[in-house]
Image (cartoon, rainbow, N blue to C red):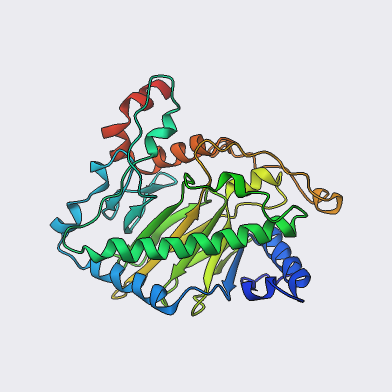
Length: 337
């Protein structure tokens, strides 16, 4: 059993060598019982970790007109800058500003019969006032992808599968996603929704946070614990696609972010490991002793889980960014109303 008041710590360096079996068992328990854990021993250079935080602070210090030059309402792919209060979680505005970045690709030429979600493929927006941001973010993104793939392969092995079980969905067209985030100080004592309670819809999420803290994780008994920042470690959590793949043996865990107190700013960079948009999640065959603890996929009428990743992702974007949806996706909204 893991501690119920703190998140487990997993050391990736232990997955090679004599400690592999014990390390896989610890990862399986952490992922099954909590769904959130720290990862150390990941090998990401320190200048990559410090560089992303430095460039984040510099971007959000730019004059607002320079940030709005790449506002996400200019992007059909929901890329670019989102100002405070314009993303919604649980129907309530989040008190954060952010920069959304995906893979660098050209928009596709689509026909009437193509899936709506393929319109999510397209270019990023980068600020002309801070040209170095692009290289810093894409270098960090590459490292986050490497580490996330290592953790996913370890999870596959911990679940009794070949380590490369999930690899076919994570080629050059995988739908990875980065957010560079700034949480301003809360406007009043009770205005604490940095990000409302939610689950992530990909396979895994990786988070680099600063020393301020604010991320909270909901345990199975309904209580909340703090994901206290651990220097040099990433926070990982299970996404809804792994919940579907394991028929609930792994569960996507509710989490939220509280706004920092007056006079304090918080910065974080989450990375979301998504597969190809056309991936369809198939239940894997768990060993009997694990399958006995798989309680099925969560049944939430307000958040139905879809096995088609692209459709699941599109629903999330349309719900979270109504201004972008109204400008670029009105035809889709009309068809689905």
